[in-house]
Image 1 (cartoon, one colour):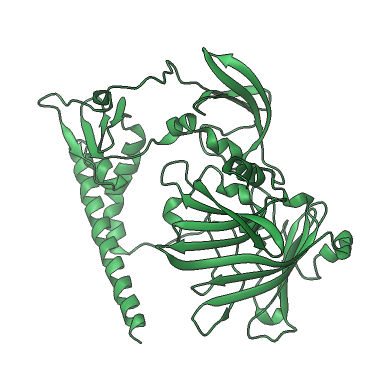
Image 2 (spheres, one colour; image 1 turned 135 degrees about the vertical axis):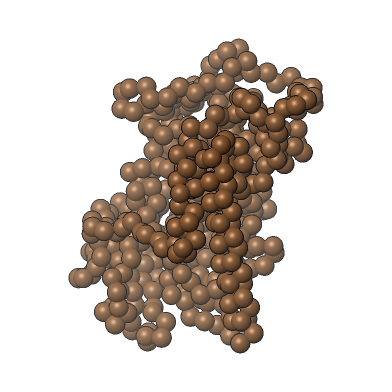
Length: 446
């Protein structure tokens, strides 16, 4: 039976641009499908047909050919079996097409890393690497193919991807034992079903996949080069409340970027202390944030393309040296700090998995150099993870609200105005939330 390291290797090496297959696609969700806008919700949901159990089911026919070509055709519910929508990639640009009767310009396929892959939540499985805790569950058979069942739990630290945007807290997938793609993905929240996406009737190397004409966009399609796909959006505020808050919030915006950063951060597993020049913020335990977490845990490097792996000793530690470039099939790879430019040179501790050094290049120029000092794996005294606050030191209790925490320590008239503005915003947000709850309650009793 394959172990977790083998599964991670399969997810990492999966490359849809090299596939040639046909399959039936089935999706099922507990709510009416809407466009998925966050990075984590990779696929754009197709219209689904409401079932007797209240769920929505969508179906489609998928064809993938060499060179990054693919085509997905799906029936439009309520329009008859002969009315279908389609989207795909001709090997150069993504495209989408809808019948004129459906109305409106069709949205392009979901863009991932600068490319338009088919059904990203199944064919871009590397999204599970770095942002989830994985558990291998055993062998399964899906769509007539050998697979490995894996449970993925989203990480709640900085290495996770948009944890606040997820409607689920657990994902169970079936990883194809040969290709590394996902044959099935089931999302749940609190044990309750959220969505299921799966392939059925998979055929490898079908004859029709060799014909480039099968992937050409129909006349009238929306193509990838169409301008205006990523228009900016504007939002209106709650009228007078926003106007009254504007002055104070303007002060806050001007103040926060210049706020003195903390000089020491410590966490003992129950409380966290952030020591500033003339005050200390105290709050509940929290994971490492920002750049430090990316150095301590190098699993996020799997989102890129790694090469090399030469063994060496660095600062007295056994290590491996890796070259990091963009992932396959995309013009860009979104990697948060500290890696913002490519290529990069990483030295990874062979024992702990920590980064001993990370060099990032913009072209041939060195753009960033990250390197921890004085690395030790010896056990530390628990007292070293606490901050002892001297008598008379100003302390501020952390609330978890970024605005409230920022304005709490702003001095003078500026601070007074900002705190008043924050209070107005909080009251307005509370009123909006109450109104939404009331409307939801009314809908639930119809």
